[in-house]
Image (cartoon, rainbow, N blue to C red; front, side, top):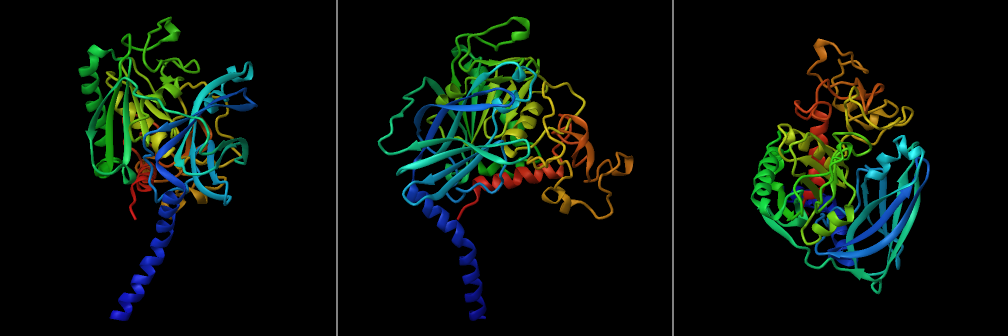
Length: 428
């Protein structure tokens, strides 16, 4: 019995060795702060260029020191960080941006445009090369920029941005928790109480979603109020312009319901002193709308009857890289998903490489593709229609929050949310 226990202990330690090794990487190569690389991303439908703006020292890197190498490969853009002295790959992460969405619009075929973006990595102790890679339409990756950091590089500090910070939910240390910064826009200083009420209501709705509620004790939440000069938000399609802290607006890419902010560097300045894995922006408006971009931000309206459901849907994009499963609503995108390439999003497929998706979760008796018939209405399958098109892109179930707001997340989306939570919160 003792020998068997000893053998089991060896196997356990062997399984833990990669985690211990990665944790040692963090203490060897990084401090506990974060390095932010602000840059401008510009181009057209077929071109892109990156121009460095500044390095910024954010107070704390909220990520998991046991998870420095991203296992998912999600996102249009992949960051690779190398220690210059050893040429060792020491950190990777993926994300999406407004720029990539704009590239699929008609406007991008006519003009060149620039967008603010940032890369956030653990703060390096030594000379470091930060590579930015872009995913092409055939899923191949191309390096588009190198950022070289050394201890003598000029690094800015945001200082004390005038914001009000409330620690709404504290469940543990940021190193093994999902840290969410809930940020106000379009709330004046006199509306601080309204923001607190709106943020509490919407955060509670999100945390009580059946897909997220089991992980509530693994989540920290901060409410952050940068007071706006005026109340509300821009509605360009109606000629309404409001002076707000984060410059949020409807009519992004001409869509009256697409609510975003292009002032990304300002948003990052606002959360610079708060542990932040995910950013949620609550915009002070009753108008319906929102937006969500993977590892970028989630945005929702504050007071619309659907605001909570909008937030849950957009958080699915921003947190777990979930793709839209609807295909009948109007969008500004043109051929967003090439039908001859398997999309990286975990909840949609073109069947080009379905083995990499939810194939193993499907019962053997369910046909692939799955007919949209009554007998399969609540069954996990492969249903045609998704990713903004009726043909060629498939989704896991007939109903899901990524298709329609009134439905819960399906099994595949829930599984993706749980796996991402593990990534942020798993301990040694």
